[in-house]
Image (cartoon, rainbow, N blue to C red):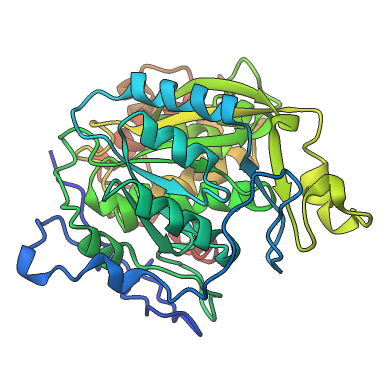
Length: 401
């Protein structure tokens, strides 16, 4: 069985420059599955921004950061934070208690995680929260590190200027002394946070490309995500032929790649939202927050995304995964087509041989296939080695996000 390659195929390789950011993008595949030599590690303090002394985080609920960034939701309830810390502690399967927390904000969950004896790396993208997190760091004696960067902008794939704070996973992990592990081993790192409401789908796609290409954080192994996501997006991720109105390409790709586990459901009202002038309930003009307001009334789901050890095989690798993506996109663009019709469109494959190989009826609808059926279909086509030109001539433009 082939080993997941660290880089993208040449036709997919994208590069970006980090405009005003502190770090430049090294390009896909820059991170390596190798231990970090202690002699090459720099002090963690090198990553800490120079902070202007400011007043610490007040106990009053009326405190808010005066930032110009887009509104984001944060965990502000100590009770919810304690519940989540206990859930994550119970889910831990290895002695390592290292957690990477994305945008902890006021640090309510951070404190609960530290009380559960976890070691936390806080990646915060809002400068207004940094003084309080740095103050908390001094109290816990080495159990917390605070770094100014945005996990969701790490290793950007898009062309052009990327707004800071930007970070390259190789740079970050080398400074933290985190070594890569083989894909066959247990998860090397657990990430916890909340998907930004405005960009949930974009982030899910970006993470899929990183996962299947075995780049960015996934070049260090099967990194586990423990993230809050809106209930609507969660339902799409776990959709199947039984829920055809929700079933889509994202459903297939995430279910093929990861074990998806629902850990907790919490009302949207339990979270605090901070915007340019303050908390959501303090704002008079809520029009800029339409993207967040539309989530009011629904639940937030804490889900665990653990990559499968057997994701990569002889015929599905981190080199040809892009063709798998394109096959799925074409199939779902013509949802009402029969399986035989799709196989004929994927010329020059031998449709009859493929159907026999996967044990499916050519008259079934394409959306009657389960995620693992799509993977089996793709691997069967690759096995016959007749698909060297399929889709690529017509779909090259879809290969750039």
